[in-house]
Length: 306
Image (cartoon, rainbow, N blue to C red; front, side, top):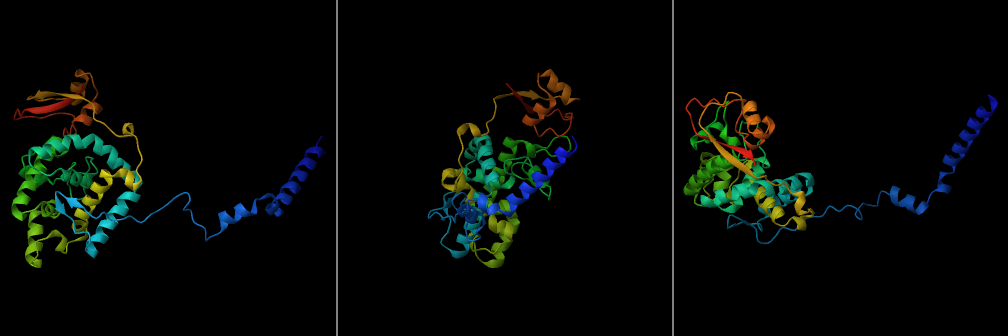
């Protein structure tokens, strides 16, 4: 009873050893060569293609001089980065379907070209993020800038997280920049580098075209990235992004209630509105604490799902 199992184990070891010694006899050698041959690529299953720069690229109706060597290379870099960072590109497409319909009519109301929605996209990815410098929200506004354009910013309420109000503030900034610099391209650059920063570079370098200015890497990439993202989102299939309409994100219908009083506990307030605190904060991220102080009895608009 004890010897038989040992014999079986020994026989199994011998069989396995013979198999590995003669493995090539059990393998399709041609297929093996394809797998192991270092000269063979994976082009049949995965293709990384160089991208053609479109001949006519525009930002806010202003032509991009893509035939200039340095500009072509900068555009090419941003097209490549944003095309082959596939997960990020798909998230851009999904979120833009949700948030562009909110941003677009505000831009139109203030006379800002529609292309500036892509500025918000590259600033934040259409998320309420915080930069290392302390800029917040979809439009990445610094506290002083936000307050300058009538947004409330404190520990209790931060309207940089209010997409409608922050878009209005961004529009006001861009209109002032357009008045100073005379075109939308420099206005966009000023959104990144500051109005004083761009004015200083123009004075130092004695040129007044964004594409002729020597700028820091971030600002030099700024317009090419906006243009590249616009091109990709306008022609997603051309750049390999395949999706169905129901893959995109959508806003849900909401109603607005107006409040001019203190709310001592927002979690309780939410339950009284037949929702929970999480849902309340999703629709009103500008509420930063579990209360609304409102000592001045300001009129706030709070969104609630229908």
